[in-house]
Image (tube, rainbow, N blue to C red; front, side):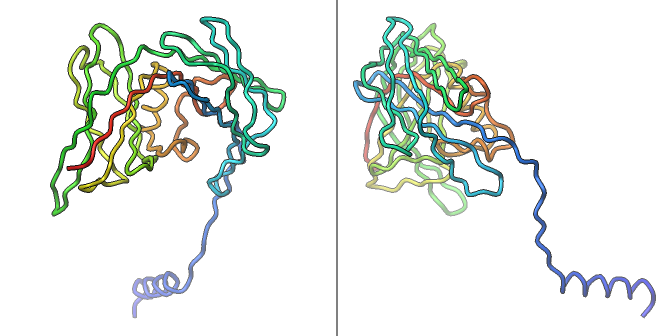
Length: 267
């Protein structure tokens, strides 16, 4: 055995006999507040959830933040609503008085650990979701069925949409659907909701909620999609967090939006 063959043989032995798990030493970043809240045009109680980020190697569970001061104000008519936590330790706060009205502007104020966070969102005018239909794609021996949201986009107005899909009463949370009318202003839209993580089958009942959102909220979710984030909130696992409309370094979003729904059975 010559010298070169001896080196290769020794390297092969080492590769086959030694396994070592390497844990990278990452810098520990300060915990950040995660705020997610909404006001809609539906006559219901609205909620704001508050939690904190955790370290990279920790369980992907955000601990709730209790004891925060949470206020939502309708700056159009001057109504202010102080939210209360639904139960101690949940980090979920609910409204009591405020009612969402299209065209009105809403401000969220959160005070926690002596820091204040604010966000503003204007509720767009509503657009009706006419119906839900379905398309079928075939490839590699498989057939995939996807829902289609059908609606008329108003002409001469910048519109931004978000779609939330429910299958047999369960929300699909790992796929994010957003759309803007930059290239489709005033047209009748047939927007296909391509599912990467959930599949539809004949006989499933599908409900689609269409939200008319403002530009800042659209940009947040669009950036989340582009960065590979999924779910209601997974930005801390993304290469870069999307731009939040909440001040003071908080993560998350505050959205004032309208809701229109349609339901269909997969045929």
